Image (cartoon, rainbow, N blue to C red; front, side, top):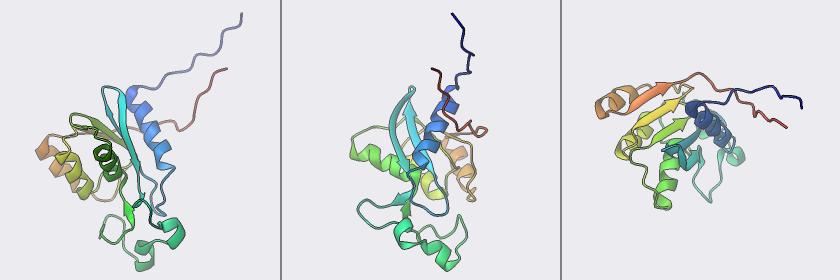
Length: 163
C-alpha cells in the first residue's frame, strides 16, 4: 500500500481565518470583501460579511456611493450602503439568540472604530485578523477594554484535498 504525502493541518487561528475569507466571498461591497466568523470553544457561533441591509439593493446593483463621492476608506462610514462584516456577525447572533460573550472574532480586516465599539459591548474577548483596514482608532479602545488583538499572516487560501 502506497502512503500519501502528509499535509500540514492548519492551526485553529489559520482554520477560522480561512473561513472568514470564504465568508467574505459573499460580500457585495465594491471596495473591500470582508468576512467575520465568531467562535467560542472552537465552535462557530455565527458569521457575517459586508453588504447592504437585508432586502434592499446593494452596491453591486446600484454602485458605490463612497466611490462616486471620492470618500477615502476609513472615513464617513455613514455614507455607505454596507453593514460591516463584524456588525453583521453580531446582528446574526442577536437574531438567533446566540450569546457571543467570551468568544473570539476572526476577521479578514482589522475593525473600524464603530465595529470595535460593538465588539467591546458584545463582550467578545479576542480579535484575530490577517489584514489591515485604514482606521486604527480601535487599538486604544481594545487596550482599555481588555480585548486581545492578534495579527496573523495571511492563511493559505487553498483547499487541500487528499483522495
